[in-house]
Length: 162
Image: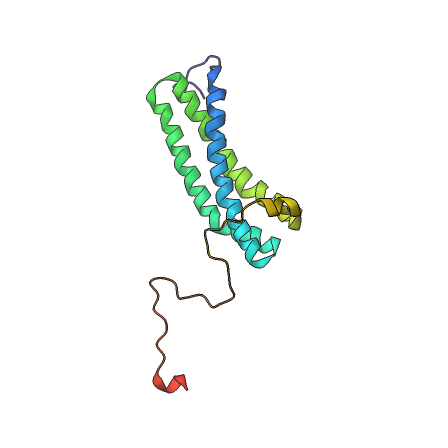
């Protein structure tokens, strides 16, 4: 297939794997943070591992898929440049991102987290005391949530208030 995309034949340049590894590591960590941080939010809220994995995967799956599809398209566009090294870099990154996002992050990580159960969230007590407890969301106080932005609360007639 190398002739089809204009890469020709020849050895892999020695610096390509060295350059590809940090790029792939950065992209895969982004996907992992999207996925596991949402799972952790649900775990903190419900303490149910099964629910945390399902909610985390369902709410971040589209984000990971869209981000991966964009990166694959960008990396495949490197082939159009006409330079063999850049084309090899693009094809390698496109294939690696596809495998990482569609196989590893959407199938293997959630499956492993289902199998591991509550041990996903275990942390030694001494380490838990040392680490900061950061959250983007305010902690759930048990109070009823306010109406989401853009949704008006239901209008209640005077007769119904009694």
